[in-house]
Image 1 (tube, rainbow, N blue to C red):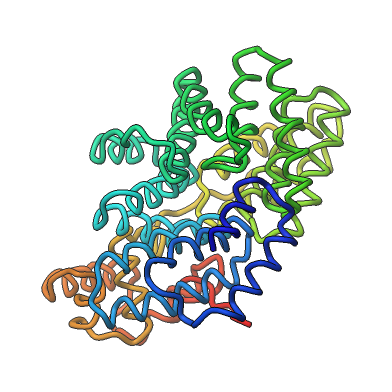
Image 2: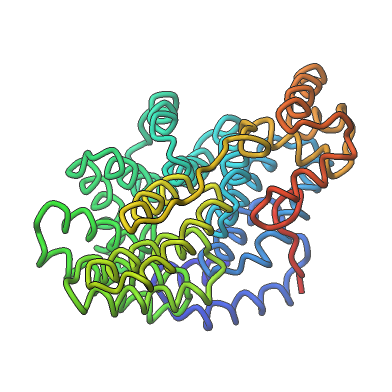
Length: 399
C-alpha cells in the first residue's frame, strides 16, 4: 500500500496504479485490516474506481457496525462521501460527510470536511458551508494530504462566495507544499480551480499556465473525470473559437466519466460559449441537458445558472420544487437509507451511534416530508427521487 500511495501522489499513470491495486487485492487478506482502510479507499477514490470503492465501503461499513466501532464507521463514511460526491449523489454525500465530520477527530474529520464543503457549494448552500467552517474551526498546520485537500475545498468555497483572493490563497496553500516535493497534493485539480480564480482576477497569463499544466498532468494520469475538469478550466480561460472547441472537448471526455455534476457544469459552460458565438439552437440544447443533469443530482447552483441562461435564450425552464427526498436533512437521509435497507429503529440507533428515541423522531419527520405512512414505502420513494435510481448509494459489481 505505501507503493500505491506513492504512485498516486507522484501522478503515475492510473493504469499502472490499477495494476498495483489488483496485485495487492490478490495477495492480501480480505477485508484489509482497519489500519489500511483509509489508504485503500483513498486510492480507489483517486483512481475513479467508484465500483470497487462503493463495494468495499459496504463491506467495511457492515464490519465496523458489527464491531460497534465509531472510529471505523467514520472512516468509511468519510470515504464513501468522497465517491458519492464525485458520482453526483450529492444528498447522500452530504449525509455521509456530515456524519463523519461530527463523529471523528484528526485526519478523518478533514477528509469528511474536504468533501462536505464542495457538496454544499453544489447544493447552493453557502451559508451552511460557512456555518460548518465556524463550527469546526481551523485545521492544524500540516502538509498531510487530507488537510491540504481541506484547504482546496475551502478555497473553492471562498471563490463561490466572491472572496477570490482568499480562495486563491487557500488553493495555493493546497498545491505548493506538494509541488515542492513532486506530489499532486490534496486535490488533483487544484491548478484548474486556481486558474479560474486567476482568470476572474485578470491574470490571464498565469491562469493559462496553470490550466495547461493541469491538462498535461491529467492526460498523464489518464482518468476521465480528472481530465474533464482540467479541460473545462483550460476552455474557460480561453477566448472565442478556442473556448468553444475546448469546452466541447471537456464535454466529450466527461461523457465517458461517471461524473454527472462535472458534466452538467461543462455542458452549461459550453452552451454559454455557443450562445456567445451565435449558435443559439445548439446552445439551448446543451444548457437544457445541463439543467436536467443538475436537477437530478441536486446541483442547485449549476441548475440556477443554467436556468438563467435558458431564460436569456427565450426558453421557459421548469423550476425545482424542494420537496420529497430533497427536503430531508443530511441526518434524516442517512436514517431513511438504513430504514429502507430493512434495519429496525434499534439497529439504526446502534449503527449511527444515536439514541433509539432520536432514530424514531427522524423517521417520523421522514414519513411526513416524503408523504408516506409505512416503512415499506421508503424503498420506492427514495429510489424514485435518487440520481442513481436506488434507495441509497449505488450498488456496484465488486469483481
